[in-house]
Image 1: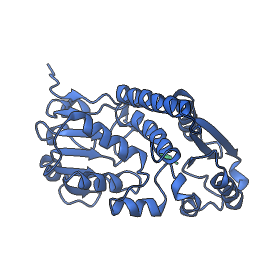
Image 2: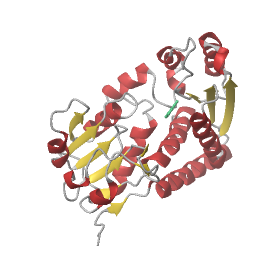
Image 3: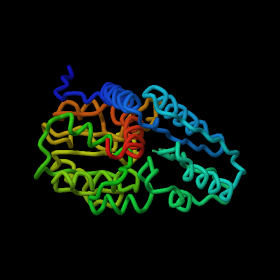
Image 4: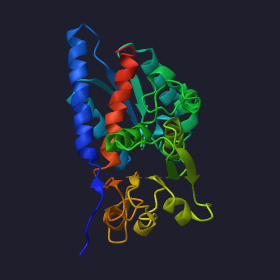
Length: 288
Ligand code: GUN
């Protein structure tokens, strides 16, 4: 019989609590005469997964009492039209956060880096602008990418002392792996970033007090590798051969050893949108 020793980090419940806190803050600010925070969402083309993600983000705005300004451009609109739209949103005082859903359609002249750089860094709700990524490297106050921010909020929820702990990040993307490594460093972890060329991933994970898996390979991190009592944050969302949604960590076996672990789905995922709302509120009311 399997016995799960880990405490499950319920991201769905925590995200709901964060949204309630944001709602309370927004209600109080509005009552005090502040302008309603607003998030602009921009989607280009018809990618079904992107449509679902953006719909969820818009719904979350509504839930917390934030304004949402939504733009849909056809796939063939092109880079110049998209940059015009970003410029319009940059200039709109009712818009405090701007999110251009990625990826942009393939087969056209889109340049994602140029689009991200065109967003006013002060309205960069995703924390993807190179200026904000640079600020993160220097541990300066700036919008932080939403998934890494959600991971840190989940980690805080465990109450585990981070200082001096060994953290292993599996994955080196600009939107998760690298920023979450920098945030763990800010929390005084000793951080190792692993990737597809890491010589001995198992040995790295076995030594980790905190594991963040963000590599996009179904169950790459085996449960037997987890150090007893470790905190395991699984950012992956993959379908296994059976078509089941699984993370980057072999959940059931890992849960027998971990102290804390996030499920997939219902772990890190729901926190991402909650942190997007938090970034937008911070952009709208930086002194609140
Ligand atoms: N595509 C997948 N995730 C994200 C995200 O967090 N932000 C944006 N802008 N696009 C995405």
